[in-house]
Amino acid sequence: WYVSGLDGARGTAVEALAEKVRSRDPATLVLGFESLLAAYAAARQAADEDDRIIGFGSFNTVCVVLQAHEAATRSTSTR
Image (cartoon, rainbow, N blue to C red; front, side, top):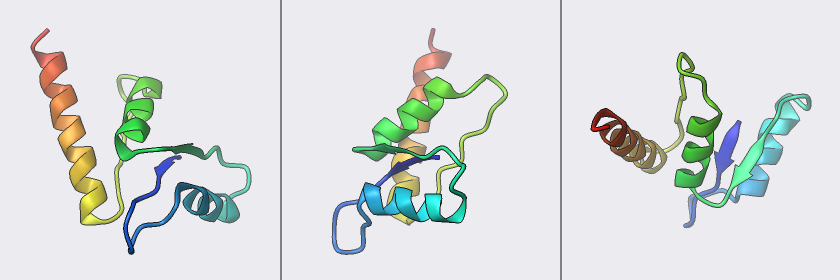
């Protein structure tokens, strides 16, 4: 898991989110990041060519991940 908190009244701090994931499965690897972009970049770096990255959460979370994915896809397709 590559997790990041969100700022604002409805957001959850990264530490609390990571702990919530760990409480469901203590053996799972959970990595916390300061931003959604940093979490997504780390997931892309760790992913193999056939892996899938799933971004989920609020509309705000998904929007950031989709925009980062589109930008990364554009930059790799122009090479």
